[in-house]
Amino acid sequence: MMNSGALVAGLDVGTTKVCAVIAERDEWGQIKILGLGQALSTGVARGVVLNIEHTMRAIQQAVQEAERMAGVEVKALYVGIAGEHVQSLINRAIITIRSEEIRENDVRRLTEEAQRLALPPDRQILHILPQEFIVDNRYAVQNPVGMAGLRLEGVFLVVTGLVTAIRNLQRCVERAGYEVADIVLQPFASGMAVLDPEEQRAGVALIDIGGGTTDVAVFEDNTIRYMAVVPFGGNKVTDDLRHALQLLPEQAESLKLHYGCARTDLIREVAQITIPGISGRPPRTIEQSALAHFIQASMEEILDRVYEELKRSGYMRRLTAGVVLTGGGALLRGLPELVSDRLELEARLGLPVGIHAGIVDEIRSPKYATGVGLIRYAFDLSAQEGMFIRSARDTGASFGDIFTRVWQWLRRLKDNLFES
Image (cartoon, rainbow, N blue to C red; front, side, top):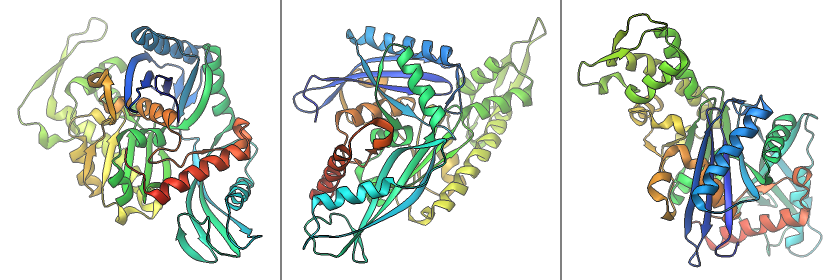
């Protein structure tokens, strides 16, 4: 645990925006948001840095704005990462027990064994998430320490990313003048910010709609069971509007933000929207219902891909708590209703929770979910969803450090401390 008064800073590097959040935690453990900064992102596409210089400058601008608001300076950033280069797989590890009962060191050896899997040279581990432990073929053992057994098996969700994508992101942060405290997958961070513990226990799908990608993460029994990335986000809606209506990119984005709706049946009145002409041409008009028609068709394509991922996960019929929408793309009016109809699941908008002081009103938006989640992750690496185990091969952490985090996770399972 961090001491009260300690500062942490989270950095969300997205396709359309870079967002920085600075916070502290008081003596009662409550989080206070001190600063918030944003910058236009022009050097990132679908979660991958394409222009180091542009991304570095956007990071500087966003963090410096947050620093000015907070009246402090930060040295290190907890950085979110996403993109279609991120993949996940299930890995199982088995060890033989050498004593009369399973001890902490056995869980440590199991964790080390789970790290030893053959990966292509261009990929590296981001996270290893324990799913369950198995003692002598008895399934769903949450805490095996102290149990008698001859064999201990663990099931892990291993999340990997492209080496070059991770290194380029790190390079941007470092060139901006900051250290990388940790790199965290954005859907995990967003989940920490917006999901209720009961939702995570019952079964819920988090759909994080960014500019370039849509991240899908399935939670059940207080752990992440599946994650995937759909290579389309809010920019697809903008591009579809641009080509359908023959608009400039900024005109299409403005129409989407100010007049957009994801359901045509929610447009109650016949309203005309005036679109300025290009290069001296006369302005044009379009009915708001027609605009909603194009937006709905575009969003339905994205949601169909999300539906495929949820079916592939095997958890489609187990999402008792339905769907939670977050990310900047979730702000589109009528989207929860469209998601509910398209996926046949209850859907709600996910707003950051657990913030009790500071700029509370400004931060309560789905577009800041990742930033707030990074803050919560930083303050307590083993919080309610705490199963984020960094890879030793990527961060230089010792296996002892990794084991410590595994053991913290096990203790919280044992004590049922999943409430924020």
